[in-house]
Image 1 (tube, rainbow over the protein chains, first blue to last red):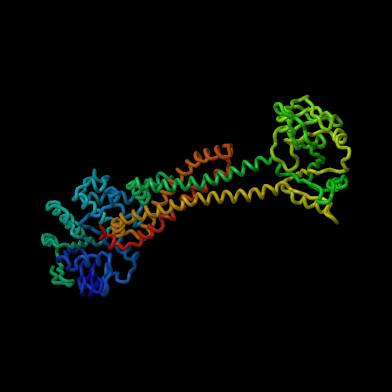
Image 2: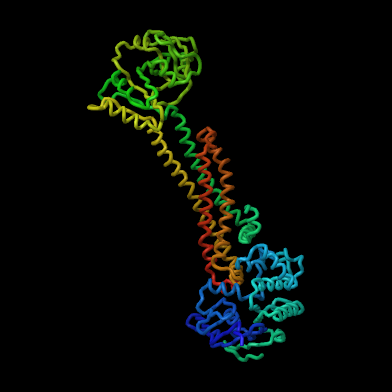
Length: 228
Length: 391
């Protein structure tokens, strides 16, 4: 049996707010296989954002283990986490989060710069990725504020794919899009899943469940159920 | 790689220039601070340096000369001592000088006025190597002719062929000297130079020997050793003569004016300090504003070093641009300043002044970098999660 691409073992995350201790995650154990399409569902305060941050190496657990592609991130420092993120995870945000001063193409190039890819190579790759994300070629030189929400999310998806990460992590990817555009973005994610990328979507929108083969339901920092 | 290509292809550079353009008003204001600082530092440096140049230029005889005068208690430099000097290596020329002070009468408008003159007995060849003629010629030895300095010629409205009266003796003016300024050897501008025969006739009571002896050395680098050699030969038992090297004066002038320049630049650097603080402020503001962007970049794989590089590059670009503008404006600004204070703008383009501009530019760039350091460090230390949450 192949190793899981993402594995959480008894993960706890405790925030201290004044004298109160908040158990954002309270002993979560989940594993996700390569090529899965996972939706993490739950109401606000259920711990799904915290779980997303763990898988995205933006945060480390208070106790327990988070294994990304077999590497335990619990003890890594800032630069160590950055290195894991750079090579394993592509982020897709609700707010698209493109850099406003860069063009669509340059936004896609950015992760490759941090990765040390040659200028010529990254330009070619970025153009390919924009094509794959179905952004019409004439928009490549547009700045984010000259693009529609759907177009911006396509650029963001292309950017997420820049360093060929095995994991795509999407936080409410359709939250700021109309139904039709949202649907086409989800179709795109499904296509990426078909080509072997693990797609993890965090959402409270039950409609997105239909795209996934696994759903993790969270409530009060614990896994309510997990079905495939 | 050429610089324009680098700017085009390097995305850190692209980001830096675009971010600077994004807040163009703020960037320009921060740049003005640096520009003023650079102008202040380099024009103050140039002012001090030009003052120095204008003063040192007025001492025309500084350099390769030793002036030998009798020590305190001695009456004159004797012929025997001059003979001893001749044995020293590295001497180009020995010029013996006898002089007396004299008050000359002249008419200024309707009133009779007096002018102080130094009457000199220097042989024709020696005089020829010390002074330059404005017009006329030098006197012949044994004649009653004389050559006068420019101040005397101007005041007394003398021209070639006119006569000067000293103690009842009339001396015909055959030459007028060029203005030379202050000297340590002889005061040419109010000097009257005549032959030894005439001088002896005017001052028959003068003792044997000379009031001073000017020694020209062959090589200016040997001036110290020649000086020591002369001293050791003549001042064997008792101190009979004093030897003064004219180049020592230039060293002390150098020291004085270096202090003045430093002081002026110190004042100028206060404005650069203020500029540094304003860069710090501006960069801090933009790190705050761009917190979310920093978060995004970190999320997609930017390391601390990447973020640090980005912000430092921004400060560097701002510094380079503003400092170069400051340097260019300095040339204009110091032209005005020098024209007003030193009144000779020829000094502006001297190499030493160009160096002060380079110094100002360097200080400007360094200040911007230092001002940008803390904000850049702060940006690099942001936690990606906190930064992403920032709205």
